[in-house]
Image (cartoon, rainbow, N blue to C red; front, top):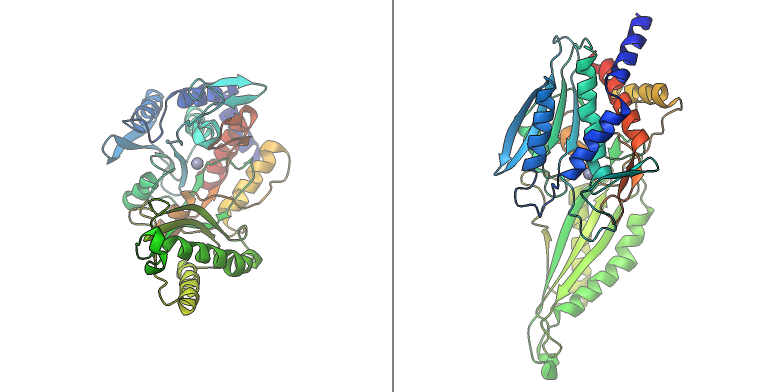
Length: 401
Ligand SMILES: [Zn+2]
């Protein structure tokens, strides 16, 4: 019955006012949860768990590793409908040298400032508020609605990896990373690569007796720029932005009068769903072959960066635009904002890929707007927090209601 449904949605919207979402997000920003905090995400996980429990929502803290807990909250459905997971990360990057007080949230001109306000305590707060709203408005659910607030997304994604392995498993999921209220069903994969170059040490005064690893690295980077990069840049994807390759670090040698016997180059490679990881490796091996043909003393080794994930890989995320979840989100955005939703792809990598690829749970990214993720001035738009909550709730009512 159409009328009843609209009434229920109005009740849901009224159940958690804008001021309450804002104050929840502020509370989340106030608790540092980055990698330099000795107990990492412990305090924020406990806070969120208590917050949900006080509301009468079924919430658990589940240990991922020492001091590190995922928060898993459940609104139970009658069992006959599809389940939906709302997923967000508890951790942020460190404050580094921010130009604003990182953990004293402040609202000015409709913007909420602080470390993690945008990435992604804003989206996470809107998701927690959604749980409250559905519960308070006593929405009749057929499928379960889960909130999984996870640890470690900024580093090794231990939190979502644990959810994929141990459940809960939902039929569909939304990751609340900031998307400016655009629906983003896809993004590229990510691989951090290291190339080690091995030379032979000698005195700088007798340089001809050595083999210089720094020179090898220079030739390699030059070949990347002139041969591989132009080819990569031409590639297009039907789902995501084009692929990229960035040399982010180079390190080698000891001092000016020694021939360097070791040099390392670290790279970030963003690969599209049309590429694959083997191809990414092969293209680099081909450059090695070429350099070896020019100079038989050339010796290099390609390694995956050791800070990659424990058991999974940073695969791309792809959900077809015709998928039921995308359709449902489109309708929700249209209802909430009064404008047709924009469908784009996320420029970074997210935990959505783990849920979609390894968890077989199609996952779309949708979250608030703002600016300055990982940078010196970070803020989220307060209006968007409320709109996000409305979109999450409407979508949950459609998928699981
Ligand atoms: Zn994030």
